[in-house]
Image (cartoon, rainbow, N blue to C red; front, side, top):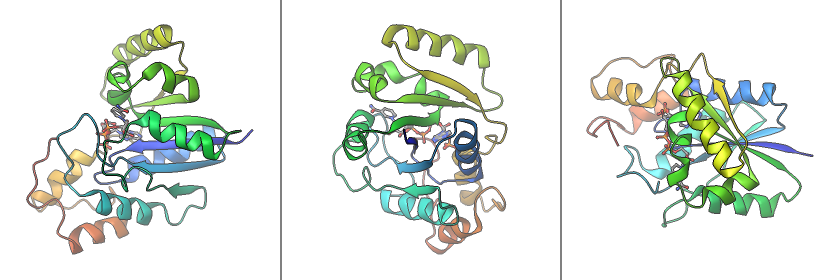
Length: 205
Ligand code: NAP
């Protein structure tokens, strides 16, 4: 059975932490490939700093050199809010035999009960909740155990040593004229500079 990792996030912008995590999870869980899905119009947010198109292009640039990584425009090409269940149902239809692993940050996963139909979503994919260094492991464990119990889900916690890097910090660096070199791929850095992204925008969404 094919195992597909789905890397969900706003990727505003994508950085080395995301790429490192994707590669680690691919190896640890024996996945065949990882599909990055930049969120289009996140249901729970006021907005994003860079537009969908720029976040999609940056994710394409970042993943270009890895033939096990691809990027899907399934969410960014839609006007309506992007619910993960809807996205996953479309993938399930496309790859009926595959096993799916949805990979995203722990902060997002612990909010799963407020997502659209979490019970149905947890039936069709496993989750890998990525914990940043500095976030409470015990809190995350307790909340994830509770969600697994309520929905009979398969959510696993993955502690990511490299996820000290954050998109929020990177946006703030561009806004304040500080170097973000080596925190993200050079091509992504060049894209941000060329298109003057993150200079004016608010940092928190
Ligand atoms: P986000 O703001 O981009 O991420 C939340 C946190 O997780 C941030 O700390 C982020 O760090 C980290 N993160 C994001 N993507 C990651 C990844 N793939 N691996 C490791 N860490 C990651 O994302 P979000 O808006 O909360 O959404 C995350 C995913 O959940 C998206 O695919 C979104 O569509 C989905 N979601 C769905 C619903 C729904 O269906 N109702 C509701 C909420 C979220 P960085 O800032 O450094 O990336």
